[in-house]
Image (tube, rainbow, N blue to C red; front, side, top):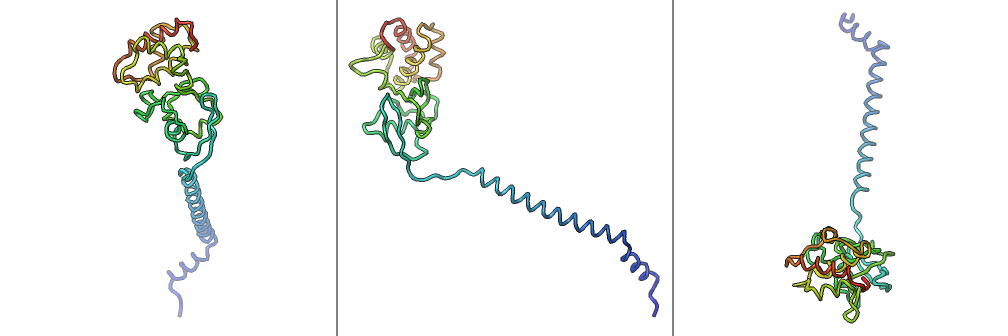
Length: 216
């Protein structure tokens, strides 16, 4: 029984070297694409895993240099410096106030290596090996620094929540600029907020402290 002409043509086409090479190439390309897709998926998975925040539990022991004294404390890594000062030290340092807890009011201002910083926005573990100065470290009731004394003399406080932040900020600024203008004092205090609105007396006290001979 003879094969039909169509069957002979199909048989010849199937054994055509050019067709066979083409099909082989398509198969190899498909396999290569599958491998690339797999590698891409694996790479994305690894990057996503790396980007995910690592959860740290438990507490860590740290030593903080606060007002010239080494203070040992055990806190969770997520604990802020403000929380540490107020709630984890014994005895506690409560001069820095918790008000907004989001770095907008300045009531929690401390000095880190001499520069004002919001302690509610700094982790305690990030303050290790840095010199921390709170309002308690600027002076004492029996020995006020120039800014503290000027705040009392010029009645530059009302409810008192913002006062430690202003005192700390101004004390640091007067060391940098001991003879400021009113405009410069206002600019230096722009990171501190007073809900009672005693700004004129705060600025008056700052200028008075600058003119005094007492140490800031």
